[in-house]
Image (cartoon, rainbow, N blue to C red; front, top):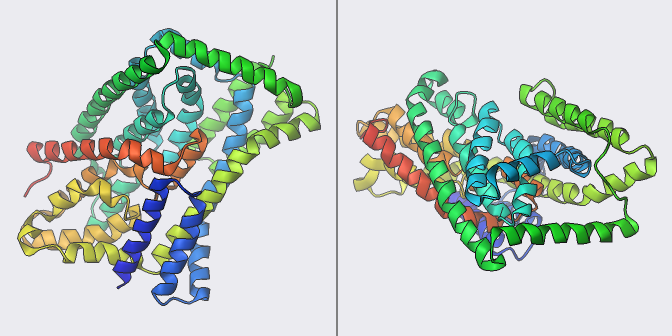
Length: 442
């Protein structure tokens, strides 16, 4: 019964997110509460679950608020203008080259193992390029998310650490056989970037006549926006202290990657330095905060709502129950192939299970069943890691994805519709490649 209620709760939330008829905060908060009440939990218990969930995401919410403010100030100061101009000049307005560059940049940014850091570094820098080229921001998020997911098969990444702890083995030993899969995965992501870049180029040409016309159209939009903005708000031009902003941005990102202090504190300090650096008057500083605060606060509320959602589903035991019952209800004739089946279904599982539930609840059960049929435990782990990890950033259970959506101003439902099938297809191909290479065995 607990599994059924949990499954129904998640399905209703996912359907509502896909339809896009309501702000994500509403289903994320209300549906889990109703599910917990139906399951027999008391309001006080639900309150405790809520508290645990909020604690798990509050740092992300704080980081998000000040990251949006920081990058907003930097963008107003013209920090990314040379990057945009240089990228367009190098690619000569080539949509396909920009798509490939996005994959490579995201892979490098993900080397620290933090999806949140990757999105914070890449989206503010690349989103203006996509806007100027009239490229879909959903393509940007798909390429960054897919590339970062594959690169996340590293020892200091979360998935391998969880799997290694379940198998009680050294995480580096678990990782080494996955290196060829990572390399192949990145090659496939570049191929996907080319294919989707070609599709995007055709869409732009169909709408604007040519890529050049699209760029010119964007420049006209920007000029009109600037004329409108100059009437009432602060008219921000490129500051004379550009290089101080560059140093400040590099310092903040460097601290973020190094992990010297919490990311939220790093961006908080960055905002407090950036404001007086670029705006001398308190009134101008206040107007700048007011300009960027709505996006930051809106998405921060969604992140906190996602924390409530995760806290209730974890606290009630729904996620663990779903993971265990999903395996036990499978027909006996397919259990010898349980690891391959779960691997192939890894990305859809991302819509139903959190990363913790997938590795700490589903993996032990699948590993136990596989062992009874002579399937090596490490083979089960590889199938589940490779099959699931590509879909990390198409899951509403990923706080980093909510951060990315806020940075890009996108909707979860539309992102899932845009990226899900591509990521699932890539995942299935990698599972079968790993099987053909002998990384996954029967």
